[in-house]
Amino acid sequence: MFRRLDTPLSEITIFWEDRPLTAYQGELVASVLLRHGISITHHGPTTGSRGPYCMMGVCFDCLVDVDNRKAIQSCQLVAKDGLRLNRHLNLAGTGHPNDA
Ligand code: FES
Image (cartoon, rainbow, N blue to C red; front, side):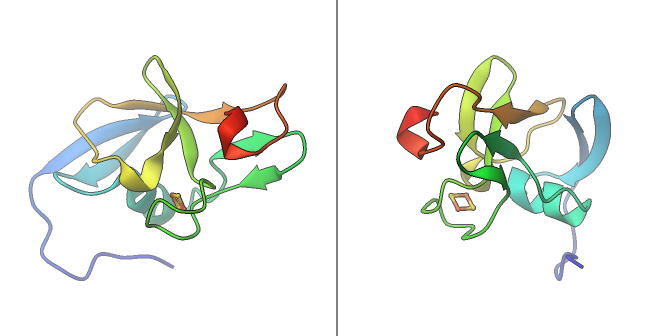
């Protein structure tokens, strides 16, 4: 469904729930996830399953956990080699971004 239109730069590897994904230097994490068919990036008790939507930092539907940081907007995060990502689980909050 999603593919790059330009000539990719150097190839790197990031990890989604321990699964290696090919990415390109400078690519946004949300783009990498969507290109690999991963459209659900977080769950909340009131919001249910969510994934990248606006791709410009507004909707907060693209939250992921990155290394030791929680609830990071994947559409605002540049992929770096070896980055380890996990689905963000917001089990206690209301699902609103401010609860993340
Ligand atoms: S996709 Fe909307 S904030 Fe990231």
